[in-house]
Amino acid sequence: MRLFKKQKAGDVNSLPEIDTLVIIGNGFDAWQGLNTSYASFRKYYQAHREEIMKRFHIKMKEIEEYYQGKLVQKIRISDVEIVYGDPFQPQELDLAFWHRFEDSLSKIDAEALNLYFGKEKHDLKEMRKCIRNAKRILTEAFCDWIQSQPIEEKQGMVNGKPFRFGEHCAFINFNYTDTLGKRFDVDEKKVIHIHGEASDRKSIIVGHSTHPQEPEYMLYQLGGRFRGLYLVDELLYETDKHVEDNIQYLCADLALRGILNTKIKNIYVLGHSFGTADVLYFDFLKRATSVTDPDEEEQAEHEEERDPLDELAARLEYTIQTVGYNREGTTELEGCREAIIRRQQQEQSARNTHFENAFRKLLKRFPREDGEIIQLTERTEDAVWHISYYSDQDKKRIDAVMKMLGVKTFNLYPSIDECLLTMCEE
Image (cartoon, rainbow, N blue to C red; front, side, top):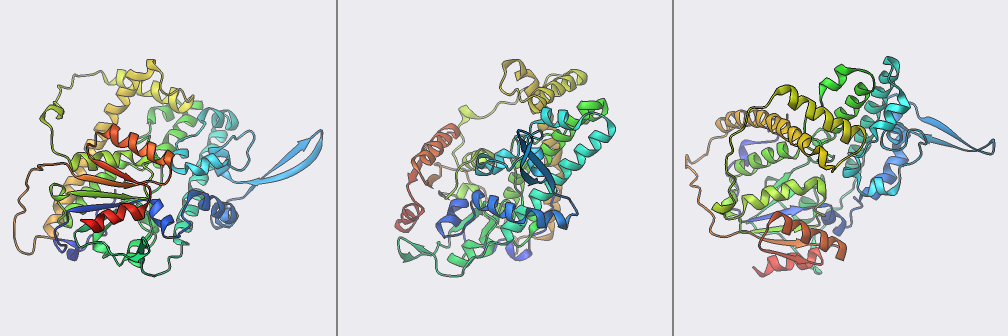
């Protein structure tokens, strides 16, 4: 768990009152001419894969393809193509994998990997090595790619005219780049890089958001193919973004900058696709910037006592069926999924407690300079959302997500320029 290493005393209470949050997605960098699409990452990965593997002393694998007894071609691949593709017929990962890269990291055929490697001790050792290598190669390639992106320093334009964000804006940046600073002269104190930034590769977070619960160690203890399943379960946990943890850090970052959710009147979302991996962030922001409806408040329920062995059995069944055999969404697994959710909530509660203790210690280091106590006020109206979209398909998806989240007031604009022009009119 990272412990607020980036916070500085100068960040605390040094901003003017913020009433507008600006959320920056990958489309914002594309709007500024940066080539930061996952299609670009695919090309970078293929061009630098062997160089990265040499860095880690990992050997490329050479696959020979035959037709009617004759050698047709040789394909050079890495552990990445074995873990995230078909291990029995490995080849370059298809465009669909790269197009939805983060979601693709949760799609692993554990059954195929188990059959490919086998269940003996030596086989499982090779499987673990392959999985570790795949993670190292992809992570290193992604960080290298992010740090290779050049950003020309020039004045950012909106609708052909120079543009600057107002003093009342703060930014939640899902990108790793410093486009806001280099193009729009935004003070870094106003920017929260929720998934890290290119200048600090250790801070970079990339992944899915489907497996936040810790791997079931009982699978490892059962041995054989269950141990192979545990290795995949472990990888899925390690490549999860752990969104709820990141939301805790987001809350701390906002608090340390004196940014109050009750003061936020407008939320601008620029170039974000509202992908599955990030929906929980938008759900949090919606709840944090809406008027609390008493009828919708969650009622605390008495937690009935459950047998630990029954809970373990349910979690194992769910993991075996969903991770091992990809049988998601079946009605007979609903009860098992509830056991997984309960386990994840317990784990999250423990992390939250640790987080809160660390945050209290941090506050003692950075007391308010004027000694003033912040007076929290209740909201009287919901924040208004202003969201850019790229295509009609993009628009339909965003509209569906916002309605699913229960956002009452939002406006969609067919370009970032048109979205930002409404900011100029305020």
